Length: 384
Image: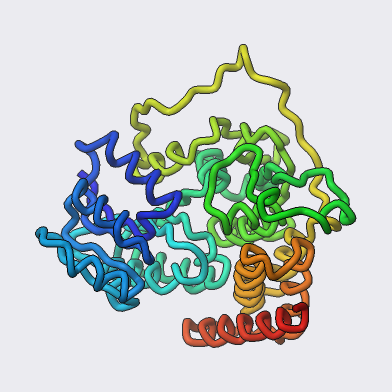
């Protein structure tokens, strides 16, 4: 039986991970649950899964839960509680599904404690790929991707030698605004942006999908997961979201992983690898399938992808700064304080104001993340 620490248990990936656990009680024990502020939802999860430890990052939410909970699970709050959750001795695998830069410290704590990582927090590798992968090698632990695209690449690479790979091909749905021009994007609403055509996700990642920033973050993530150069990583728009990603080999052969738009499949694969377990997930019916199409991404209109490539190629602290500026810009957009196209402006101007450094450390990354957020907020005040 695999003992799991689930960080971000009340979010989209977290709740779907618990669906996988619920369907396979003989395979998994949820030793640790951790969330941000949703104390009532976390309490329901505690009562169902009986973890040894439960943590709320928000101290006030943790206090609320402690006041009414009388069971055996130990309750902690705050950043220190998250670090303890990540390194908890009862867990052998940590599912990191916390959103954004906040997932970095717990992931590093889990690696330091020798835990295998089922990674759903792409920002961890975006901002600190060199540090995270080095720590995984030092501790001889695995980082298994949960993102559907990276899980697809991982599967397509099985049994093949890395030096035979010519290209890693990440597919993108194109989001809800695929095919629109800049003039049309000036008038889109938050509701329009959150109406993703193929996937059901949290608000922040749905906006990132619409801007193609999410695909850009996945490009940087691929660089670290598969030791690839940016010239080896290609993005192809595939509106049907059936082909989750592909690998082209030096002889011209292309391996593709196909599946339904259900995140539970890559979650289960990451948790059971190298074994493929039976599941009740929806199957593809090739007799009923509509045509599959592929397009070149419009990186001039949807500049998030181009900015991410630029940040990745610059390297050092630039991906950290790009990610921080995006988090602030998307937060402002969702609050109605920023237009859709202005998200790109905040990212680009913050990157332009930054001089990248290559002497990476966690301390430096926290400093540069804070600087980028402060600079992005200053730009927002000018917009208003």
